[in-house]
Image (tube, rainbow, N blue to C red; front, side):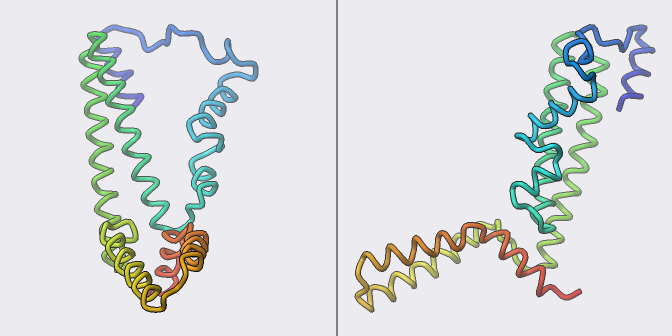
Length: 185
């Protein structure tokens, strides 16, 4: 992307130099340390995307794929914002280059979503699907019916559902791991 910008700037006869203070002037330790600080801020304290995913408990293939797709979409918003700023500043050529790059990123995002769909098709179950909510409601409804038939006291019902909720806090991750374990290799 940088080459496109530099070529465009040369064609326009303008400079690619940044007029704002450089990080080395602002942060002791220089640009590298400043960049690391910005990355930590972006990733809410994690040093990298990989660490953020680990901290969030994302370790299975589908979880990583979903997080990466989300990250790509965030980047398209960043590009959109940069393009809009360039347009407002009257930098139409810069805006056009950014727009083209954004289209390329969106194309990659579409391919990633298609890959996710293919993965779901091969694994057989999408735990993020709205159908999962229907399945859970069905089974929890049946559990309630059984508790009613057994005339179970409210305290025991509450204890059951509270304990079940605690035990299934990371159900999506655990279920994906279960499907991954039984998937034919």
